[in-house]
Length: 229
Image 1 (cartoon, rainbow, N blue to C red):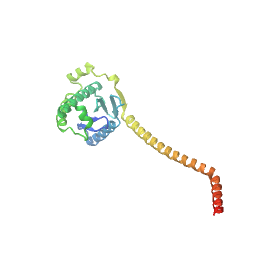
Image 2 (tube, one colour):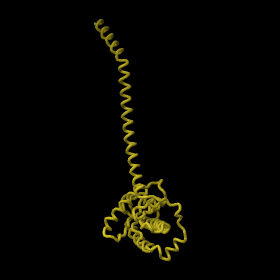
Image 3 (cartoon, rainbow, N blue to C red):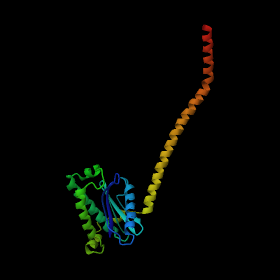
Image 4 (spheres, helix red, strand yellow):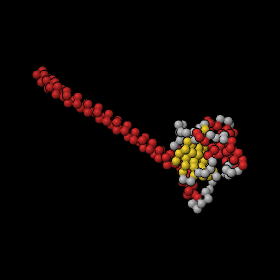
């Protein structure tokens, strides 16, 4: 079962589409909120250097994402869901999203996505695309269906080139990177302070070295001025 689908702009993790399904448990809403938060954190940590396809395990579930053009397409499934099938689903979603936005904005969907300034901006496209998501989600809900088995057997998606990670590794790595950036900024600030202090110390040393000569010269000039009066 596909429980969550997010489409976001890679550059700044701006959400363009969000579609979720309810978990079948007593704490379904709280649990889903936790996984939504994790999904957003994953999106925030992506950039142009991130792997194009990746699976991230989190408890009994797994996040899978595909980066295509300027967008990231992320889905969450049960860990047992076939990886080859979910990546075929994401590839189809990527094509459908591009086509729907292109129809909505007049053709140049990449430019529209790159310049949009608010979340869920493509209202008309979203309504139509959400229907597509729901239809495809039902189609891909049961991996054991004959049609899905056929998709798995076709081996269109090369799962050997998909990076696999754990949610703790991804999020903690981000925290360490954030700490590194903060530490680097602190070091730069301290280096600037040290540089200013060094200049000040050098100026004081020069003054102490030449101060006696300046004082003697000033005294001589004062005596000469007194004599000339």
